[in-house]
Amino acid sequence: MKFFIKYSFILTILFSFKVLSVDLDMLNAVVHENVVSGGQPTKGDLTQLKQQGYKHVINLRSEGEQDWDEGQYVQSLGMNYHSLPIAGKDAINLENAKALNKLLAKMQDDKTIVHCGSGNRIGALVAIHAAKVEGLTVDEALAKGKAWGMTRLEPLVKQKLTEK
Image (cartoon, rainbow, N blue to C red; front, side, top):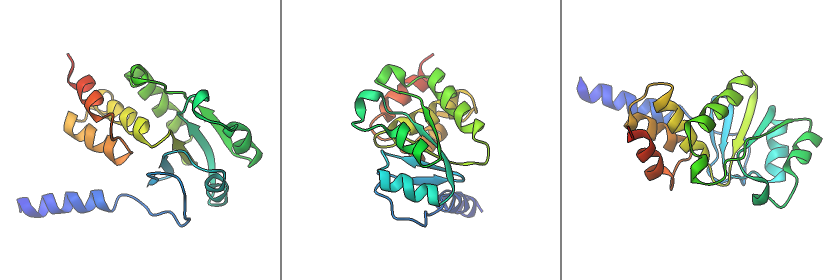
């Protein structure tokens, strides 16, 4: 019975992600219900996602990280652009995790793209929110963060989640 429950849980995790019906250059792109998360999308990615019904783009990159005006391009496609710059390790905090969650909640059922450079910052903020607001254990929150793209920031997030 214990094996069945564990196996069932693993299958649930494996099959909880949808596959995009477009070929994207977006690094680490993963679909979570109506949200695509990952690294920096190209103009071609944004155009394809617009054609797939995506309406919003949330950019976690700071202005100095990009060499083109993503906001202008997104708006030219008829999509809504939201900027939440997360620059540096100090910006990986509960306040910004809540701000990202609030933005995602505001989109309701609209298809939304959320990105940073690689997906790492998104996953870190998702993990912090999962532990501090949703009440998940540290291990559960870290797993959720990894599912959203957290990689190199895991040690920092783990430290923040275990601090008293």
